[in-house]
Length: 212
Ligand SMILES: Cc1cc2nc3c(=O)[nH]c(=O)nc-3n(C[C@H](O)[C@H](O)[C@H](O)COP(=O)(O)O)c2cc1C
Image (cartoon, rainbow, N blue to C red; front, side, top):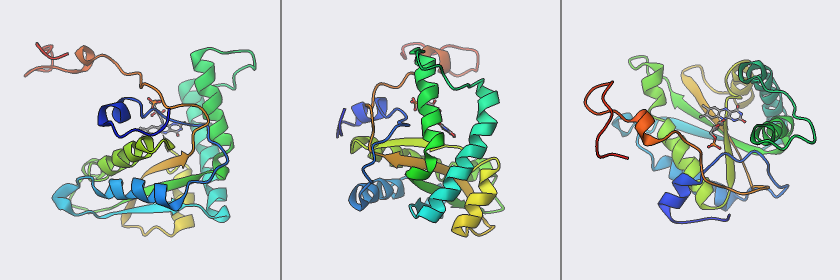
């Protein structure tokens, strides 16, 4: 699947891509993703965000270390193991792609999303001022046929490493990290719980009527 300008197709097929070709992401494509990120809302329209593009060999080396740290954490949490070569189940395919992404993390371009830390607001509320920018970035990537994967590599042991590598000041929150590249494989429909499972009407326990 290539790019698309149909917003419904873009949103419903922007699934995570973890396997990439060797073709670098050009500045123009990346700029469009970053510009879309800046179109997102933020509290009081403060736009106190920074998007740090990670491309140099030195910084990629740090990214690879962060990915290895994250893998150590998520493997037991998700019960992940490296799949056998002949296992072609959905889970094995996802795990294989996830291992490939983490093993080859140092080969890809990626972007760090940071938000200024205002002490008057909770970190969750501050996150709300940059999560929409990250989603716009992901949708702009999908619209251009570019693959992307949100990661937790800037969390766990990776946070200190990434902060130091890019010189992030202490009064900024490292909120997110997204790997980008040209997909090996295709975008495709996202798999999500049905609306009825997650929508309620007026009360926590009341299913919504007429919505579905
Ligand atoms: C906050 C956050 C952190 C994530 N961290 C990782 C990660 O470290 N490694 C990874 O392979 N995928 C990561 N993902 C991707 C999710 O696994 C993926 O979005 C989810 O399984 C849904 O799959 P889909 O995007 O293909 O529909 C992360 C997603 C989010 C929202």
